[in-house]
Amino acid sequence: MSLLRGRDAADELCRTLKEKTAATGCRPCLAIVRVGERPDDLSYERAAVKRMSALDFDCRVFAFPAEIGQEEFLAEFQKINADPSVHGILLFRPLPKQLDEAAVVAVLDPAKDVDGLCRENLAKVFAGDPEAFAPCTAAAVMAVLDYAGVELKGCRSVIVGRSLVVGKPLAMLMLNRDATVTICHSKTRDLPAICRQADILVACVGRAGLITGDFVREGAVVIDVGINVDDQGKLCGDVDFTSVEPKASLITPVPGGVGTVTTSVLAAQVMQAALRAVLKK
Ligand code: NAP
Image (cartoon, rainbow, N blue to C red):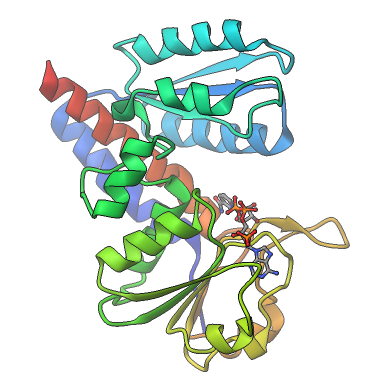
């Protein structure tokens, strides 16, 4: 078994990004839009701000009170969206209940949609368009696999989870790279048997320890996207590391796996958005 640490893939991505930034002289700008103070959002925000700062990108945080109304929020969001000095927007979701999330996403400029929320970007991901901004977590899984040199062509990949944020776009990204992909979900019958067929098994469920050793074929690559808190209050993934690790050829840990790569992928997409904006001028 070999441990696939996210930090190594993230470092590699950032090295390339630094070179690109230096070569273009462009200073990308990310706007982070947060409503309220959910701990998950604050934790991702800290990581994103740190990553952008390490790359010398501009990063502006727009934080709004949890009780903000739809009209006021939409007006503020549209100002950020229309600001030509902002190249990419990261909108934390879910938004509080009083806000109409679909209406907000509908006005988000697809050219600034660096976390792949808009239908336009998802359609491009599904069409295999290389210009698409894929949701960062799905793209981070691909970055981890690429860093490790895992060949996707012809391999059998099983993804457990079918959300629009991770499972579905990831399935398309893998299919676009010629993997044979199976998507599983809560109604899938005999999940362990399907998972055992995987050369690459990705868990994006949100159930601590769901994937145990008997779900895994000897030598499979196991990518754990899940972020959960166990009975002892410790962060853990969807994969039961103790029983899976001896069987896997490569395995990502939680914490320290895919989550670590997400902000680097976000930075890469902000850079791309900035370069496209500069070229359009
Ligand atoms: P989600 O929207 O709740 O989707 C969960 C998926 O898992 C659904 O498709 C659901 O099936 C499926 N599922 C639930 N229970 C199952 C079971 N017992 N067997 C098989 N499938 C089951 O969650 P998400 O937003 O995709 O996130 C998934 C996990 O990834 C969470 O732990 C989240 O915290 C983590 N995450 C991590 C990152 C990162 O940067 N590392 C980023 C985003 C999310 P149905 O569709 O049938 O309900």
